[in-house]
Image 1 (cartoon, rainbow, N blue to C red):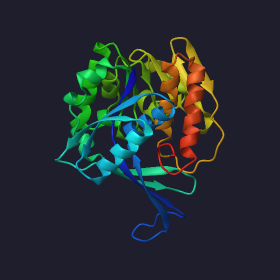
Image 2: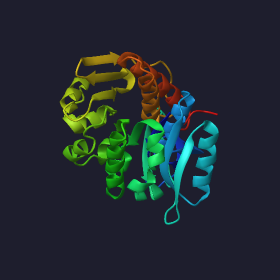
Image 3: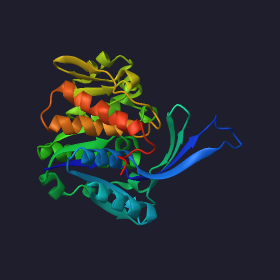
Length: 290
């Protein structure tokens, strides 16, 4: 049985710059081209965990889409891609500062055109869980597809999870929570939690339990917390240096979900997530090194 992941596949242009970006000027940088996209990142890390992920996504009929298909397939991801001749593959310019913190300039490209039919019924029949990247819900053009896919997964008896992905793009928290109502696990970071609850205290996630089954909050250098009807469980972060924070949350999601679907306790699920997150930030690029 497999885990379905729905989300973007991207070409990441990762520029690690030595100093502050100068408006209208130049700053030297080290630039790498890597395969990314929140959906693709989580799928790649799931494969790294020994899970069988199926990635549902749209890509363009271009070099970036073909490269992503080849790299992800080699990594153990089954790519259920729709080739969209009307748009290019998602591209993200990632600016990484000297502390390893990233700022992103995304163009979702073909990902914006996702439709409910991109999730095949046969994929649902072979899966146990569906994980949805919140970017799908945060773009009006793909929102209906995300909501429909979550509903189809629940109807087919799958468990579900959603990562909100981008606090700055959650312009209507009440609408977002309506869209994810019934999800088994919501996976926000502290910024996203603050938008959804008005607080950065992980305990505030209890206010979301009328809509979702559990909330797993990544708390940066502090680690992560699991909040459900039984209370709150927290773990510290895993040791390691931060070279590039791109995809840390996506890797955390994969580690936690792999452990959760293996029947591990909330604490062990969190530990699996923070371990994978630490691996992700210790390298340039958002997917496992090959």
